[in-house]
Length: 138
Image 1 (cartoon, rainbow, N blue to C red):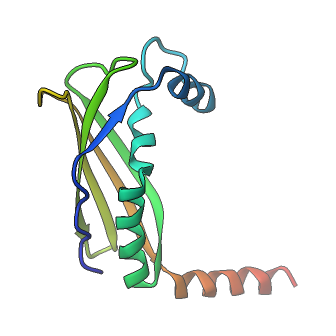
Image 2: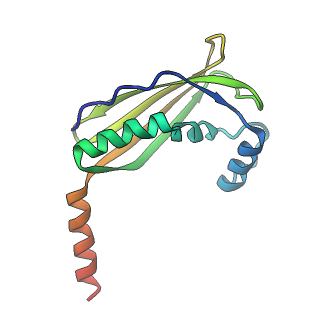
């Protein structure tokens, strides 16, 4: 397993009502308020993507989304800003990169915890799987 990336500094994030409405439509969320899984969009921030990309580059691998959990202490609110802190840890068997994120108010009050598990799949394994599939279709 590659070394764990250096976590980015906390990111200032915002619950944009239009983006949250689009996310709700795209995911089929029908509840009131901010969709439960909306913080997933914040994990696509460049600083987070770059850290994941570095791990995958070093391991000659690709990340495959395995699972994600959200735990809330209080609901997110439209048009509010929050601080998102992301830490990384890894597992050897199977190879995984795990993102542990916390969402807090600007006063530091915890709002949510997020765990995202990415399976780290060697590119060599993908090439072998693709060759098997192309051979099976002949």
